[in-house]
Length: 458
Image (tube, rainbow, N blue to C red; front, top):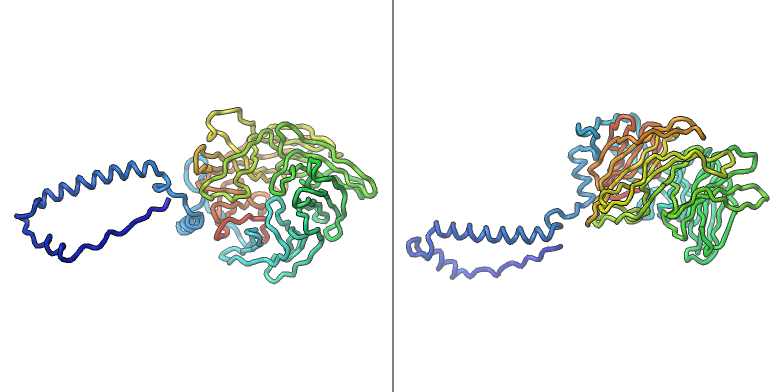
């Protein structure tokens, strides 16, 4: 709410002289009486003002500006997280060497080097921002990104971008994944207007080919979730697909496997279903993390969360399961985070965001947040870790452990630096955190929200 203040008309000089020339003994009020009167008037104004402000909480606590909030944090050299035992901030994480942070923001790609780097634009013709299709890091500090087709570019400034796949003007790219060895890609397209063909492609980076297609009006509308790490014969691979239900943004549910064999046609086989649909969330090796319960969360009205992730379908319960050798079924399911039963207090629900497995598959980290039941629907976040033992069907997930809590209005895990150190975004800055100790360090300050997609360096 903006207050309109109208200046009173200036007093006439003759009136000022007349009032000031009256002696105290002849004044209608003594000086003591004037003070008493002014105090009474002030008390009345304060009382009514307090009632007015009580009805207008936004005037007492207006939504903080993300840029100003982050600037204050940087100026104070404060970390956005606290240790769970109440002992205050964690230790400062010491990171040697330099790193390059790559992030996407408003239909552009940027990189910033640490320490004390300045954000630089990455050459990326044809790029279109879509959280469902983040750029992928390739060998040699190259990025594979999508938009008007698929492109490869160098991260460093002045890199030369090359197009590796084209699409029709009425198509949009809906998924893009890379195999574990970095040699094969899989991706999908769908008609922008919902009328036409959904297509799935797979193969070498510069020569992928069509492997499956179906009418967009005949859902499930498939997009690629990941490659399946299975024992495969030469020339055959298996893709894991999810259903975006015609939504080209970051929305997917259910899971299917699709065998890709040269010269042979296969149909997707259902692996994960349910009503409401379960959400595939992350995968490492043959281990799949998915939701057992999910729901929509109100978008914060103070602009603290980016619009494209503010009101998604979030997981409320988690489970892990393993793919069998042929990737035709899930087995040995284990609950990681039990789903919550109905509670009349919406703010009591917890929601999971952006789970990530470490490169070695032994650590799972995720944000667990709650949302206020009333505007501005502020979120309260914490980082949890889960240790995993064993492999394949013998995988065992330990009980989730609270790593740190955060006072930041929006927290989002980013790429791993190694098997122990994870990057994360919090209120217009990027940090690194040791997932064993909670030690944290500021890596880079951004001017506004940026989705971190890659970190390079040593």
